[in-house]
Length: 214
Image 1 (cartoon, one colour):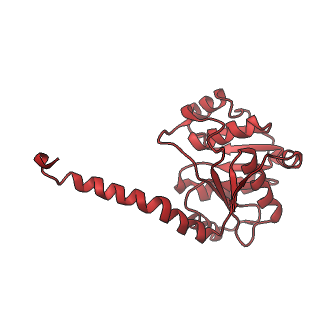
Image 2: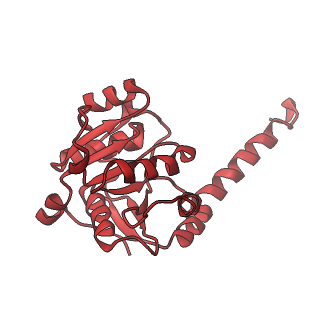
Image 3: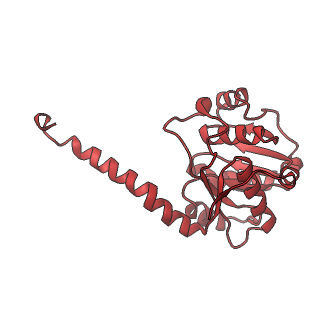
């Protein structure tokens, strides 16, 4: 079951500072939502122009935080870079819970299991929201409002880390839902990835139709 609830005072005390790595549409929108809810957000992106645009929209600050003060790290980068950045974040921010926002969770988790790192502070998640636009220019604070955001803890996730990610979801006004990693991926494949693949295949077939039949 998913539900939308406002962040509580306890939530705000729990999340002191947030680091968002990746200032594209999703990362910048999370920054805008959390900043609007009163959290202190720091931004980082390998494209400094993206981080500057996101900061200009109110998604956070470019000032680097004190590592020990960061309570939550959100990794919002392309899938191939996620495992390395999750491991890096767990090491650099010793008191932080780390989440990522990739749409496929099992692959990330399987890769992380192979790393020599304590994953108790890692909790995957997936906001079921987006746009055909990319980059931070069209980011906005209500992108996740009343949209489902799945939280996917694993067997070693600390309960306090799960609660912290749930608090961030509430701060973004999303409908939180807890799911097993494999159940999540199967559900997403049915409602999102498969229809997208079929549309691509159908579109590809159109190129083989004689022009006079169109």
